[in-house]
Structures are given as structure tokens and as C-alpha cells.
Length: 279
Image (cartoon, rainbow, N blue to C red; front, side):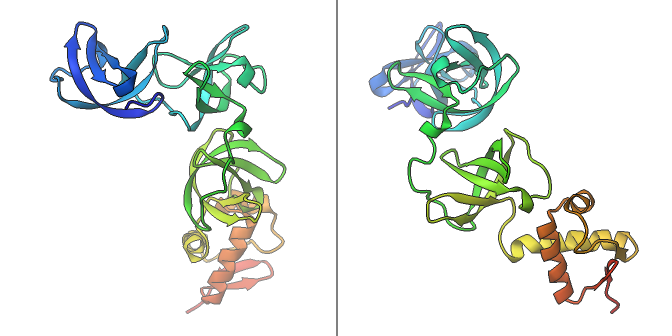
């Protein structure tokens, strides 16, 4: 059975002037327009296609890959705005994705970028975008474990840091104090679950926990130390922005790495900074 708004592997039923007709099960035959048909396509083959509705609300298939499928979140550009209807977003397909008025949280303008969730509207059976993320996220207890690698999409900036969407299903927080660089809304990046709180909220990190996180940072500091002739003027009183500018690290990560190097007797910490230990 073909699923609307998702990738499906469907058998070719017949070839016709408009293109290939695929077996969509209970949805009937679904057209793959000729511009997407390979020269050697023939009945009996199975093709991976994305199924959606065209501008006339007919089910069609495409071999193009949208930026997000139903159930996923994405950072999409506003192409146009139609008064009384909504905004149309570029999601990588020939037909733009509608963000209806009722699903907007602010008035979008052409060329704006928005974090949205792609959903199937049950009333119209159309694929739409929604900026009302609270309707779709955090509906179940988070299925993640501490230290688990996850995909993140930065949703918004907060006084504490950045709120991020985790694996398209839940929200979490990246603390500014743990980051070595500022992030931008809409940025997609890999991350890790640092803590799963009792209330189900997630604390996130861009680095794996424990030694796996510290080891590459200590090597980075040693490289800069050697390049500087064995001595650097950074210490506990150095400002976080100075450390971030010099090392691309948060002050917390810098201090943890420095402590690890000191315990391994690779550096000597002094009032004015630190230096390579003499061996």
C-alpha cells in the first residue's frame, strides 16, 4: 500500500504516454510522469518514489527527494504568500508546500525561512506544513537514552541557549555554556542526549560524554600549545569569549580538557597561563 507523503517502493503496472502507472494498492494506480521515467523502465519493475498530490489534487509519484517527508521537521524558505490562503514553501519538489493560515504563528513574507513540521491534513488528505510544532512534538515519553547520538534541528534561541528538535519528534535544550560557538536557527547538526530528566525533558550536547568528548579537545589544545612555542596565556580568569575565540570551545569544555592534561602531566598550570611540561 502506498503511503502519502512518504517514499514507497511500488511495482510498475503499465507504460502510457503520460508516463508510468504504479500500483498504489488501495489508492489505485499512481502516475510517475514521463520526465522521471528511466529509458529502460518496464512493467514488473519496482521503483522507489515519493507520493504526493499535484496542483490538481491528483496522486502522483516523483523520483525527486523533498527536503522533508510527512512526520519530519525542516527549515524551509517561503516562496510566495497568498492572502486568505497561506504561504507556499520550497520543499524541493515541483509543487510548493502550503503553510495554511491556521498553521502559522506569525505573518511570513517571501524569502523568510521557517522551521516547520510536515504533516498530512486528515480533513483534506493533503500534505501541509505547520509552524505549530507543539501539536506534533513531545507527544510520547522520549525514547532516547543518555549518551545516545541523535539528529538535531535548531528551532529557536532562548536565554539559556538553543532549543532543538530531536529526531523530528521531541524537543531538547543545548546550553550556551556548553557550546564552543554560536548556532543559528534552522541549523541541522548531529548531537547527543546528555540527560533525560524525570519530566521527560532533554538536555543535549554537541559532544559525546566523558573521555570521548575530552580526548579530541585535549589534542586540539596541545596542537595550539606547540604552535605557540609551548606556552599560552589562558587561565581560570580568562573570559569565555576569549577562550571561544582562541579555541572554539566553551570555557567549561576548556577547563575540563586542561584538567585532564594536568592530571596526565602534559602541562604545567601557572598564574599567567599554562605551558608544556618538560619531560
